[in-house]
Amino acid sequence: MAMRQTPLTCSGHTRPVVDLAFSGITPYGYFLISACKDGKPMLRQGDTGDWIGTFLGHKGAVWGATLNKEATKAATAAADFSAKVWDAVTGDEVLTLAHKHIVKSVNFTQDSNCLLTGGNDKLLRIYDLSKPEAEPQEISGHTSAVKKALWCNNDQQILSAADDRTIRLWDRNTGEAVKTLSFEASVSSMEYIPDGEILVITYGRTIAFYKAHTLDPIKTVDAPASIHSASLHPDKDFFVAGGDDFKLYKYDYTTKEEMESYKGHFGPVHCVRFSPDGELYASGSEDGTLRLWQTAVGKTYGLWKCVLPEELSSENSDALYCPPAEIKA
Image (cartoon, helix red, strand yellow):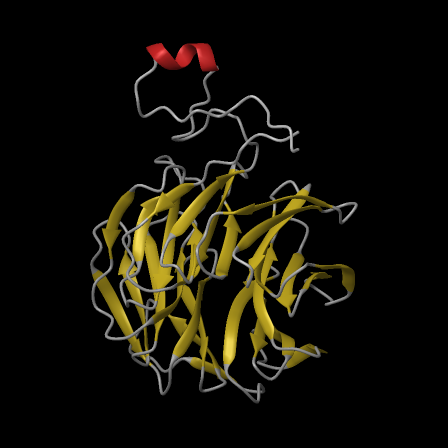
């Protein structure tokens, strides 16, 4: 028996959604940014999916997008050989950081003072945003395009994943690789959980968990389809994953058992992330939409209002009806 999941669909993009990220929890709630091949990253209210604004300025597909914890700054990585930093309150462009090739990944330090970028020129770059005219620190070592680069260990180390089928852990100060992991397939995604220092990666059909400091393995789970992205719940009770078969899978983190799966998208799922409060997860797809899914189906949260059948007649028409339970035949 399971309640019916009713995802909220966020439209507006005209091409595939390839990356998304949440801010931290702020006095105004939390926020969600999406990167899309239409070149127009969008900011939304995180718990409802309501559109707030579109960052206009890139001249090519946007491959990566992120917000700082306070949701005051945004950064985007694009095919126009640039990364941009934006004022997330006004929507104004603050900086354009020119690169020599397509940029795939952007990530702020915790204090929002530095930006880490990675892309098709195989380099990691660290920009001091207070001195944008200064040359960035460059870290080399990958032999193919960098897909994702993230700060870890209180911004003293960097984790990067590249098309050379490796994940590397770097020392920020020396620029030297501390450890390298090699895989039989290209790593499709990477999530870093500061609380507990856990690294979540996906490659092929595998979702794998590692200790971020040492890159020692914790566990792996194999999914029924090729997986593009996975996210661990803040309480580490379960994780979600999505990929080629249009579905979102939810697994018990402890037992590795599949708990449920949902189909809502009309194309492969490229990215999935839990909200900072863990109440929902967002997915982005080849179909050009974002969808927000409830972690606890049937709970009143955000725009989800669950009512009993006899109350439907007196409720306003836009209330979502969550049936008490469904028995699968």
